Amino acid sequence: MSIELRQQMKLAQKLLMTQQLQQAIKLLQLNRMELAGALQTELEQNPMLEETADDTAEIGQLLTEENGGSEEVTAQVAGDDPVTVAEVNWEDYSNSFDADFSFTHEAEAPAADAPSRLDFLAALPGLAAFLAWQLTHLRLSEQDLEIARFILGNLDGHGFFDADIADICQQTGCASEEAEAMLRLVQNLDPPGVAARSIQESLLLQLERQGLEDSLAWRMVSQFFSELSNRNLLEIARRTKTPLREVQAAAALIAELVPYPGNEYSNEQVQEVVPDVYVFKIEDEFAVRLNSDDLPQLQLSAEYQNLLSAGEAVTKNYLSEQRRNAQLLLSALDYRHSTICRVMESIVQLQRDFFELGPGHLRPLILSDVAQDVGVHESTVSRATANKYVETPHGIFELKYFFSATAAATDNGDDLTAEKVKQRLAQLVRQENSAKPLSDNTLSELLEQEGIKVARRTVAKYREQLRIPTVKFRRKE
Image (cartoon, rainbow, N blue to C red; front, side, top):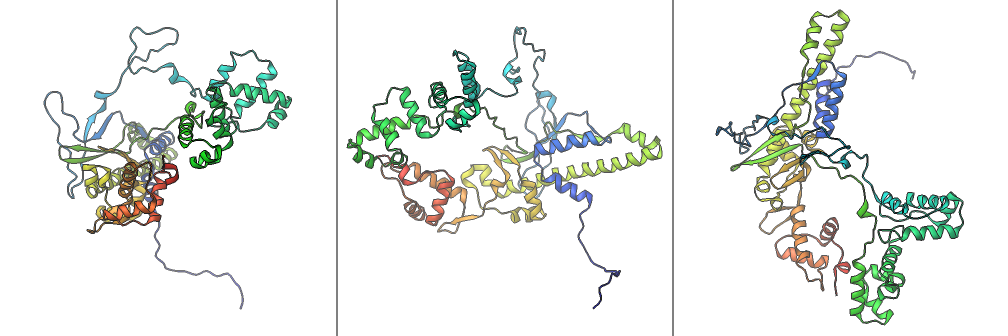
């Protein structure tokens, strides 16, 4: 059999994704902040795009005009009709304050929402800065300062010293006695327990700061830390030959200490969740609005379109290509807007009890239910709900929150979501007797008595997800 090259014609059907479809899918799965970055990039690269001068935003009838008039009420999410949205001028509700801010003098009457000096800092001061400030009040030599800075530079987020004496000596060239002395000095700074090398040492430093070196609490932490961690107070009472009541009192004192002293001084910035969609209740119905606040509103540039008709051939070809790209982007944005709104309307309709009564009334829902209701593929619903949040009358939730398979079934045939079972499980734990906490098996039996059939292993899994400790750690003698 010879091996040779040959040409062959073959007729076959294939599904090819056009550029327009690829761009629409890409924009659909972006959340609001990612979309803002993508639109800004397109504005910088495509001269055919420009921001509109109109600052209006799409919204339903949420406010009544001051002159007594009212706009047309947003369509209801009650049937098959799509939600329509009206427009409102956000210039009427924009915040304004005097931007003439100076550090050299105080304004006579500063605005309530005017920026403070801390708003201009690159980073908020954290634990290391607080400790360094305390060191400036001590008379230390250059060698001691170098050792102290090395210690501060090796504190983790909990305030623990994440190195050892040998590291200090190797880095600063000091003797071990000097390293021990400077570590001890840093441990005497505030907050109590800082620069410890373990939780046990941190607790001992805090007890020492309170003058309790000869107390039962000190002995329990230093000699019986393993038993204390497992709340085996009976064993501690037996081995120390101390009444159980005194051991319990010492354990209560230890519980008031701070195991991670550096957490209070964390300067990590908490990112605020910005909803991608709003769901408003207007009288007895719900309206859906996509959050387009602060997003650039794009349109084709009239100036460059005039250049397209009067420019040279090379310029025309370039501008013609850019106009085609701009039109594809605008079309993809319209598709994203309509798809997310239709998906959210379907979720509101299928989870109406949740929006009316709250999280305890979430019903089982899967992607195919919404896909069938909207008339799109499941993957489209998945992309439309990925990494996006909705603000509802009951708080802000991730869109994926509304999708949950059946976790349990009641005796009357009703299906329950995992979230609803978790809520009932947490309620049973809150109501339990702390002296005799409920085991996973008992919790499973109690749920079954209420008609909710959940296996013990499932109860244990939900308990861990709720961060509820085991019986041993919930028991209080």
